[in-house]
Length: 120
Image (cartoon, rainbow, N blue to C red):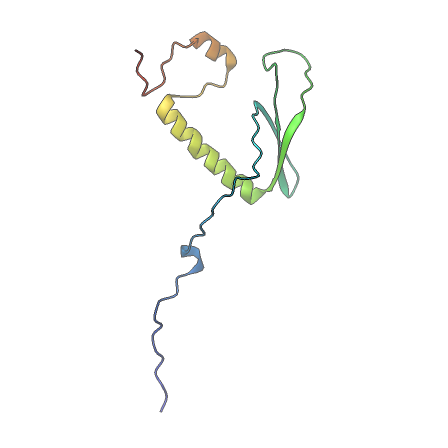
């Protein structure tokens, strides 16, 4: 007589449904401030150079040193792009739009109150 297969004690979940838990160890982390970034790429990697420009409003040629360089594959770059986009969106929803044009920011001159913060 053939035996009927016994059901497994716990059903197997597909690998896609399982999530990895990542725990960060920041002990040896290097923190640096950057107010300038340059993004370049090769066929296989994205390269982001971070710099500190001590005079970001100067005109003409400036030479600044690269303090950090991150090299990543395009999959990681796309995940970073998504995470940065979500972070910026939350920030703008809380504090208002981030103006990138320095002339417009100077014209506003602190007139714009961030959303959610009431003046005293």
